[in-house]
Every structure is written in structure tokens, then in C-alpha cells.
Image 1 (tube, rainbow, N blue to C red):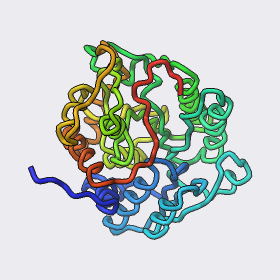
Image 2: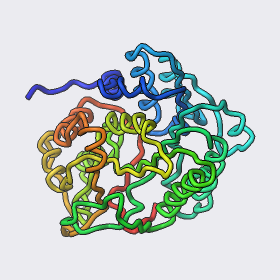
Image 3: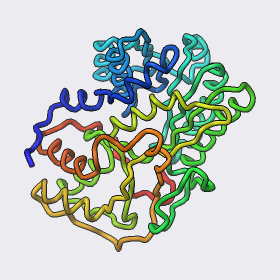
Length: 342
């Protein structure tokens, strides 16, 4: 198989190339789109993907990207591509309520790492702020990013939690994520807001993600913990596409959907494959466990189709990215965490 040669421009182009299905669905989404928390790991490429879909559909629709604007590279990339960037600290209520009224909201704002010792900040961002956002945009369709780790750790033989399984958040971060969902459910039940709750389990972008974390450990000669033996992940391009298309499925009562790849991937097998590509043998520690945070995304696959990039391809791409000196966002996933401590 021919080896890919990677540049940041190539990766950004892949992440922001809309599928035919997205182009058709963007025509059906009435009104403009605003992404709140657009400066994070997924936000810039999601905004670019939406804008490219709009352009290819030949329609007129604005994409607003709202964030604090601390990442200058992402801000410049979005501005250069015709996205209306608004610098705003969403926790400033005056600035939040001054944002333009927009028909479609994709809510990506949140805090995870650094929770321990600063729990009040995580709860403020993940549970207090959503209540204000839900009030401000009560008349909009809202896609709410949430987390697959609000479900319990389950035995491998179960195939992962489905949307109908009881949530059991472990730790303050996961509990605050559930509080975020409940804030938007409150809006749905009180104001009639249409909401799509998007429970994501590990997006992969090559500059960060679970595959990057494992590959990085191999290159540094650090041991890979096998206590959590498997995980799910999904190509970020597809994850972003599902979020945009999810605006069509925002509903009241709310729609809840697990978003991840169809495969349950063995960490050990993945590490061995990465080691082959990278030319360095992985080091392992601990025995393989029998359970993990796993989500069943069958409902997502049925509605939106399978991801455009397979798990095996992503593993190869990740190794190539690192061998080509690709940039890192320096945002580890802590995939091996089992006690909800972040």
C-alpha cells in the first residue's frame, strides 16, 4: 500500500471535505449555524466543514464561530475561509446574551482536564453555562456535545452501552457532563426547544486522540497500560459531519445518540501495529482487563452511515503523521483513566 505524505494543509483539507450526504442535508437546514466553543479540538474543522458544504451546495448561509480566540492558528484559518469569528467568553453573561439570534446552534463548550482541585470551574462550564445558553437560544435547534463516559464501564462481551442504558457517571467531570445534558433537557421541556444530544466517544484528528497517545508512548519508550483493553474511536471528519447533520434531528422530546466508530479496537493489537509502522516495539504494563468504557453506535450508523475512514486506516495515518513530523495539539485524552479523575 502506498504511503501517504502528510502536511497540515492536507489534514485540514481531508477534515473539511464534505460528503454528498452532508451537502444534501445542509440544504435542508433552515437558517444560519453558530458554533459555541469553536476554538477547541474539533471546532475549527467543524466550522470549515460546514462552510465548505454550504459553498458546494450553492446556498447562502452564515457560519459563526464563537470562542475566546486564544488559538491564533485556528482563528486565522477560519477567518481566511469566510467564517464569521466572534471573540466571546461565554461565561460572561452580558456578552453571551449579546450574541446574535441564530436558528441553529452547535454547542461544543466544555471543560475536562484540570477538574481535580478545580471542580467548581468544571461545574461552572459544564452545568451552569448550559443553563444560560439554553435560555438564550431557547428558540433554536441545538446539537449538544456530551461524553460517552457518562455511561458505566461495561464488560467487553456487552458490545458497549446503548442510548437506552442507564447512565452512571463516575467522577465530577462525568457528573457535570450529565448536568449539561439535563440543562438542555430542561429547556426542551420548559420552552419547547429542539435538542440533539451527541454523546461522543473519542474523535481522532492525528494531531491528538487515543491513537496519537498510544503512538506517542511507543516513540517515547513509555509503557502502555492494558487495564483498559479496548476502546472506540471515530475519524473526526465523520464525527463533525454527524454533528452538523444532527441539526436536522434536533427534536422535542430530545434525541440522544452515541457517536463513535463501529469497531471495538484492542489497545494491544493497535499498539503492535503502530510499532510495526514506527519501527519500535511497544512496552506494555498490567494484565488486560475485561471491561472498558464502550459505546454502541448502531443507531448513529443506521442514521448517518459508517465513518468515511476506517480504524485500520487511521492507525496507519497516525504513524505516518508522526514520522512526517506532524504537529501535536498537546492535548492527551487520558484514555486509560478508569476512576473518573481528570
